[in-house]
Structures are given as C-alpha cells and as structure tokens.
Length: 253
Image (cartoon, rainbow, N blue to C red; front, side, top):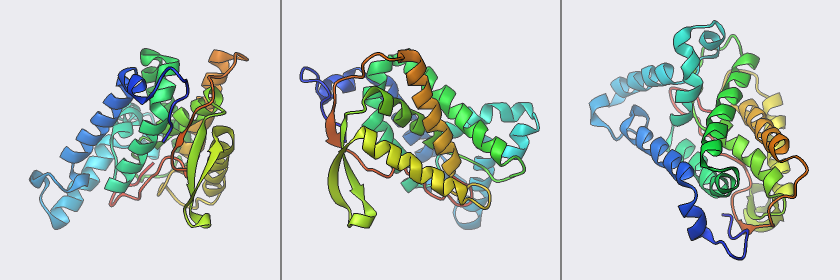
C-alpha cells in the first residue's frame, strides 16, 4: 500500500481527508453484503432460488450493453448503479483494496467534490465505452473496476514517482519496489493485451479498465497541465491492477 508522499503528512492525515474514498468502500461493501451475491442474506434463499435471484439482481442493476445502446431510459442509469454492485467476494475485495490504496491520495489531491464527480463520471464512461465495443451483448456487467482504473490513471499523472511494492506472479510473488510510472503502465499494458483477446462478452471487462485508465490520466493531464506532480511517495500495493472476479451467474467488470 502507498505510504507517505509528504514528510508532513502520513496515513492518518490522508484518512481524515478522504471521506469520499471511505464512503465508496463502505457503500460497495454494504450493498454486496445485503445483496444476493454474498450469500449472506437468507431472504434470497439457497440453491437454484439464490442463483435466480442473483441473475435478476445483476440484470436489474448491472449494465446490459444491448439495452443501454438501444436507448432504453431505464438502462441509462445502470452505468452508475453497476459501479456499486460486485459479483463475488474476490471481485469486491480486489476492487476495494485498490480503491483504498490509490483513492485516498488521489482524493486529497483532487478535492472531495471533484473526486466524487470524477469517480462516477469516469466510471460511467468506462462502462459505456465497453458497451459500445460489445453492442450486441446481453450479458450483464457489474463492478467498480472502470472507475478505479480511472483513479489509477489520475494517480499515475499526479504521483509518477510514488514507489509501490508490487507482487508479480511470474516472479513467485516476490515483492519488488517500483515507481508508479513503471508499475501502472505495465498494468494497463496487460489490460490492453487481455482486451484484445476477449472473444465473447464480459468475464473480466479488460477494455473498461483501459478506457477508465485513459480517462483518468487525461482528466488529470487536462486539469493540471504541466504543473509539477506531487512529491514522490513510497509504499506497498499489488501490481496487477483492480481485481475483477467472475461472478456467477452475472458478469464482472
């Protein structure tokens, strides 16, 4: 996870100045726990009844590309609601980990209101971008990865020297420390390669990750122009980007 980026400001200070990030984490977690995907709410039943409830839940609150692009008024809000719905525990925990690691510093730099609008706006456009590339798909798309990818993109521009401890599976998960300008471009390159290999509808919506990352980086670039980035940070954090599980029966972004 990311540590201090300023000698005068530690994690406690960042936590106090990042209520939007913590609010998003709390909202996503609560929605998941009370929904059918967690399996903890007995009102949804078990077995086939639970699977049917999950399908209906994902279809109601998730993005269905074919319906969204058909101009269905009810579908126009789903790119917002889908940002708060997750398909599995792994999907939720992976996304919230990356939001926690990168969101606090980004929110502090952007400001609370701007960060909230940035998060929802970029997340919305990332899902719309994915839907446009899969216009005929009737599979549901849920998850905050597109918005969190935008946070990573903005983070790269704002804190390029932030040192992140990364875990690489092909190096036996050996923790290695790299600056953000090395780790995050490597991650988005992997997403781009994976997006090019997608043959069907969403399992993990890699293209939404790429679109979100590009939007976040572009937003920070346009807003801050050539102004100097914040002082370098040091810390720890996974290197494989926002994690996205493969929910059943819905699909995850």
